[in-house]
Image 1: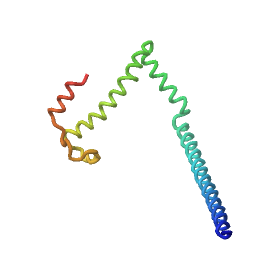
Image 2: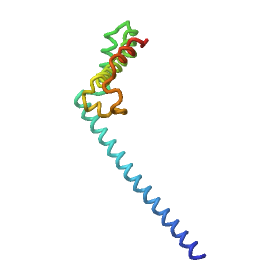
Image 3: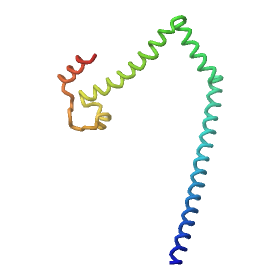
Image 4: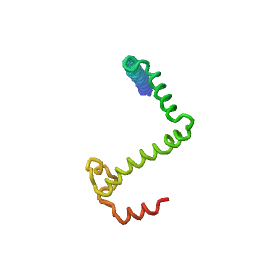
Length: 135
């Protein structure tokens, strides 16, 4: 009995030492990675600031130029920025998916379909029915 309890205690201490070693190794790897990431980020920022002047000033100047374009009509900027741009992006992406559904091409996209072989290509009458019923 005593030998069994002693070996369990020894095994537990050995396991705790292994856990602390793993934690130290993980902290070293994550810390080194974070340090390298910050150094890389600062280096890229420094190079971009040299290229553009001051990068903060560059983006501020672009924003001020955009605002001066819509001077006194900020609601147009809201309409275009908050509704039209997302709608354009949505229909661009989904138009591509619609072409893939109806033609089965390009193959590099259609091979990732979830239900392969089902509704290939999509039925044209079904497509027209869906387009007419959307409101």
